[in-house]
Amino acid sequence: MGKPHVVIIGGGATGAALAHDLTLRGVRVTVVERGEVTSGTTGRHHGLLHSGARYAVKDQESAKECIQENMILRKIAPDTFELNNGLFVAITEEDMAYHSAFIDGLETCGIPYKEITPKEALQREPNLNPAVKAVVEVPDGTMDAMRLPLRFFATAQSNGAIIKTYTEAMELLMSGKTITGVRVRDHVTEKDYDIGADIVINASGAWSDKIAAMAGVHVPLQPSPGVLVAVYGRWNNMVLNRMHRSGDGDIILPQRTLSVIGTSSWVVKDPDQLEMKKEHIQLMYKMGSVLVPGVKHAKMRAAWAAARPLIGSEGEASTGRELSRTFKCFDHADHGGVEGFVTIAGGKATTARGMAEVTTDIVMKKLRMNVPCRTRDVVLLPHTAYYRRRM
Ligand SMILES: Cc1cc2nc3c(=O)[nH]c(=O)nc-3n(C[C@H](O)[C@H](O)[C@H](O)COP(=O)(O)OP(=O)(O)OC[C@H]3O[C@@H](n4cnc5c(N)ncnc54)[C@H](O)[C@@H]3O)c2cc1C
Image (cartoon, rainbow, N blue to C red):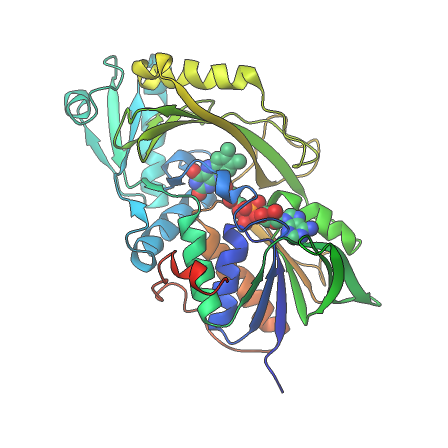
């Protein structure tokens, strides 16, 4: 008997990490992505390798996932990150009121931290607001949004995965209540064809409920967009966060020669209809300049929006900030009575490897295979290796 075949719908961070895990465990993998790889939310995220500190008070499950994955990624993807650490900065009395809950949260979630004096913080980051009252250093980092997924894809490809870009899943093929494959459209030739599969994984991020609907099932997925603004100039060398409950424009991240201010948050029904709100750009400038006053007059290089794939039902959230950043895997045999179909949704780009591990464990059981996960230790190929086989 040949290897079982798994089709992954979605070529973002989650699909990339899944392709890597599944190929290492001896499965034949095909990824179908309707655009270029990382063309969904992944290629447009902020670029923060989360330590989990941002979620340490209100969303501790996600915070623990972030610190675990942060440490693993440093090992398996060396030279992908700028390991610059992050500063959580209290500027107002309201921020100070959050300080002790923040420290408690870091302790509970096992996130290493160091309190530093405002004087030291200003020596290290001279553009920081001089009104800074308290500062905590954590192991945040900067990442290039595309390179980490490309490293997962490159390694999966070298282990036999087929990655089909510009290939859109149009329909799920079913025999009774069992998924047997995917009908796809090749957007280069505009031809449709079928790909058979033992299992189909829906890793389509903010589009997950649309794909689930093709099988007549539902996932509680709330697309929640945010606006990011890149300004000219590297105003800080460490990741800067306000020390308060997550809010608008309270992170400034250095990315090459730019600084990226983010983000806002609202909810939409359709992730393909993202309005770029002008007032959100103004808000990024306004709130960003509380952290670093100089960015107020910095020239804008670009502004864009992307939709977070958050777990939550319609009507549950008004801005998206109420929803957890953790992830959930749905085996649709148990969620909707459809065999051969699994959805993985939610999470962060930082936690994609962990999401893939949990999902692949479920897929292994369904395939009656007993192969342990190795992605915590296998060092990934460089991102450039992704392009070598793509002519
Ligand atoms: C504003 C913002 C800032 C963020 N900042 C950070 C950050 O700094 N750090 C961090 O760790 N996380 C961050 N995130 C979260 C992170 O970006 C997402 O959790 C992650 O990228 C989701 O990856 P994914 O692979 O699940 O989804 P996606 O990257 O969206 O991938 C899903 C793919 O499915 C494809 N697809 C959809 N329908 C079909 C179809 N019918 N057929 C084939 N393909 C299809 C899409 O084109 C897409 O490429 C941020 C999110 C937002 C919105």
